[in-house]
Length: 115
Image (tube, rainbow, N blue to C red):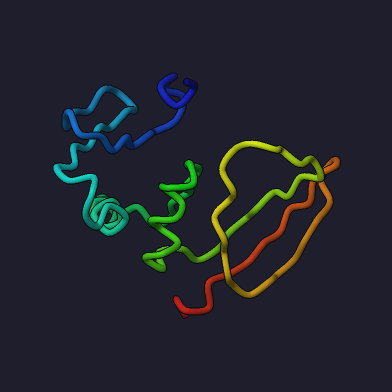
C-alpha cells in the first residue's frame, strides 16, 4: 500500500504497537470494539490534528456516521449496478452540491447536527 511509502506523514491506528518510524506513526489502541471513533478522535486531538479523512469499509464508515463524528461527506455514485457486495452506508445530511465526474456523480453533504 502507498500509505506506507513515507512520502507523507501517516498515522496508523492498530492493535499491536505504538511506534514512530520516520513519517509513519503507529498508535496502539487497546479496544477496537468499544467507542472506536471516539478513541481515534481523542488521540488525534492530543496530536493537534484538525482534520481527518476516512476512506474505509462500510463498518468503519458506519461507526463514525452513527457516532455523529463527521462534518462533510463526499460520495461517488456510479451508474453501474453490482449484483453482489455490500450496500454503501446511508448518510443523511444537508445536500450541498453534486458534480458529474466522468460517468460518476459526486454528492457533497454536511452534518448539520455538528453546528
